[in-house]
Image (cartoon, rainbow, N blue to C red):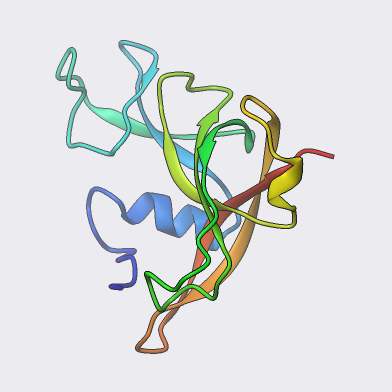
Length: 135
């Protein structure tokens, strides 16, 4: 795994925000829509984008439980998931679910962002947004 590059022009703002425990998403002011995955301009109107601070609330779209190590960066078991930020109903964030048991998960359940330090195989740490059930 390659650690996120906070100086990358497209994704750097996302990782810098995560390092400050904030969840942001690239946004088109003209279309008032999320643009995810980040791009240099809006794919609909070609306007410039800015980074919008999100509330950190989302709903669960899909998940699975990984029991056998596919990626040695993550200790098993872990739960990769697709979540939908409440402010961006057409966006899908790839993340992990934490602080929960898979038996309690249901589609469309409310989630809240958390931030965890992840470490690459090379020992490089970075902060990443993960989600847990809203309590």
